[in-house]
Length: 160
Image (cartoon, rainbow, N blue to C red; front, side, top):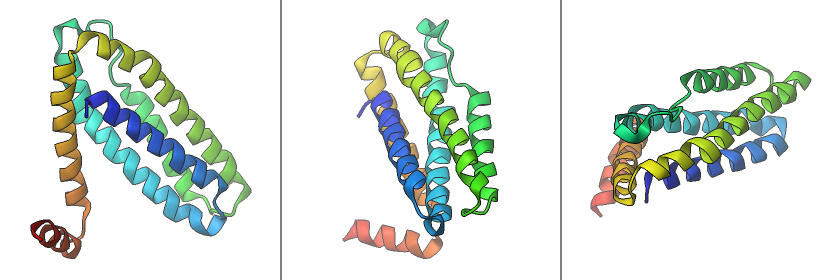
């Protein structure tokens, strides 16, 4: 799968998770928010360490805005703020709506501006190779996030 398709799938999963979270009862919000924040963190790491450096290294990338680290940080801080609120408090919904709006704008900017330009300057082969590297990085990040006992189970299951 090519690099941009991987990132768009991540965006779609984040949108689904936010829609589920918006409708969730207060008792489930913390668990769903923690899962969403973990997925967003993994997505950001892959963009910051692999995707955008590869784009920036392309000599044709001049003029592409690249990764907006300030937007990533602001979105992260907004979701951290939500996580500090009681899930049944009225301000939780307002804070979540604000964080969600920030993330949706960021997703739109990437998908309708940045990714369009990246597809113009990088070949299908370059995007496929970059996608392969990103998938490998994601696998490493998921593996690193596992507890030691679940890592052993994952390794044993792969060998079966």
